[in-house]
Image (cartoon, rainbow over all chains, first blue to last red; front, side, top):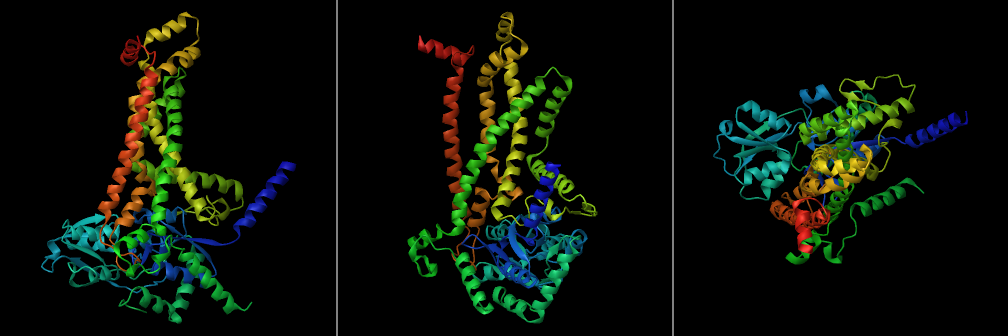
Length: 238
Length: 315
């Protein structure tokens, strides 16, 4: 009997420790300016700025965790963290596995970048990050797709001539092209996806509603647009 | 205290936390610095400190994993030699199956399975009145109290847990290889040695512990040293478990950086990987020396070519 009482006391104690609601936010940390590890070694970027503000408005305590892009969805559904904010566009394929909040970044163009604009895009060799909407798009156009694990490697592949061009979000590529005279944007913008949303587990409807309300309030008072202009100058706003 | 005050203090606190004091006083504005001070500041950023720390992570992982894997291997080899059939089958199945699965597949599957298995057990104990299914479509959902580690735990607990899963996964994989090496080494001990023990009236257990085990190491050493060097180089698999090892940081730090970062630079991965090359070669060199010494010591007095050569040299 004594043992049972002790057991229940321990249970009650551990339960009270848990009551503080902590939401673990998953991100990649390799896609500036959306999310990256800054020189101080902390996660930083547009996703993190928006995420922290959402947590404040929804009265949640948030902790950031980084995870490789390849396994970022499997680790969400198995419960290692509770959200994905990693510049992830809302697509039908992803929506079949996880749920998305309303978008916190409007549909933004992707663009091809290469070393010369004399490239026959439908027949060229194009780099894209594995498992992105850009990779899916390249595969559809009939060009030869070369996939890389991180965004940085896709650009490095263009620089060293391994591929003819890279397809990625314009906001990611624009600062890189600005600072490298050899690189240039090729062809018109490509519109893919339905904007970026916060990924949550399908069973986590309560968290999804809280985040949806917080995103709406940030859209309403213009603070979301301010963050977009700060981190992604020139990008579309709401 | 009114709330604006508190917000201001909080903002200051946040600022203080996100911009740690630089190691050198002159690092306040890197864009104004000359090459050498710039490099000094660059190499002492918080991110580089994490890089240097990851060398220790890797060495600690190796120091913990190697003896555990050896223990798994010893257990597996003993099981494979057992006269009790189910134990023998278990030992043989362990070495055959684990060695046959690609490491990367094993690392993606086993830690997630272990993690979910533990969480499920805790869920059954801690939340008996939970009425929702644990598997909801793609989702694996347990009650908050059963999460491992708890969502509210600080980041280092999450990292420590990932590290422990990594040690377990490495130990199981490398244990299977070690089991095969040790099994072979046990079989290589000359039959005559064991027979002599039996002639003195030793039991099977006594001949195993007093004759086979002390003599087998010299046969196992070449195989074990191979395994050790493979283990040393297998640490990039850690990132699959969210543990950031030296290769992850080298790739992350070496990638080209735009002026979004405080220290912009072009693609420097070559230099970072050269540093890793030096580290790995040093580690290999030290390992070789230690294994050479061990081999000499273990050959002493053995009925092998090495032992015979030592005996002749001593005469």
